Length: 225
Image (cartoon, rainbow, N blue to C red):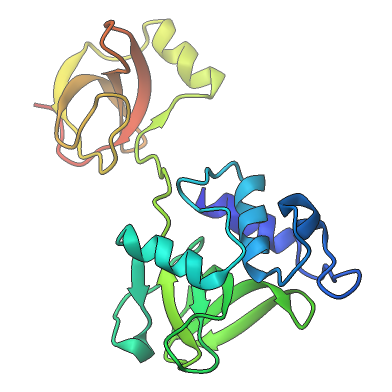
């Protein structure tokens, strides 16, 4: 999800409003107004990110408060924080330095001490910008609870055929370090392992209480038991 929202935002660089605050993003939102926050929401929607992860809001302080309430709010270095943002995070700006966020953008990447962002309604357009991570203009970062699947459900037909054709190893139990709950597989929960492929374990995990299973990959750390 992080990569998707960044790529969508990147493809919008150069888009200019058609009149004062008149944009396709505002048309989608249902309100033609200051649109930096609306742009973030539009990108999230285009990436298939639910409003439970990035809320549909137009007012920057409301977005800041929403993430703060979920404990997904990280102060910038200039405000005493030590968090290094990642691509797909949301960056909040406080140009007046009065502790209230007044602009918002999407983190594209960080290189060294340089933050690259993609921002809507920046000089009346979608624009890539750069800042020092120590900039006083950066108020904080919002860190959405993206579903970053450490363990991916197999979608590639070739990999699924490998399992269906019985070309995997004999099932054994293995501990797998999965940082996110997928189905009913919790961190360090045992699951059936069908072999190791490219440093990942192929595992079978329950997806409901009806003894239905799926096959997926999980990052391999602990080895076969």
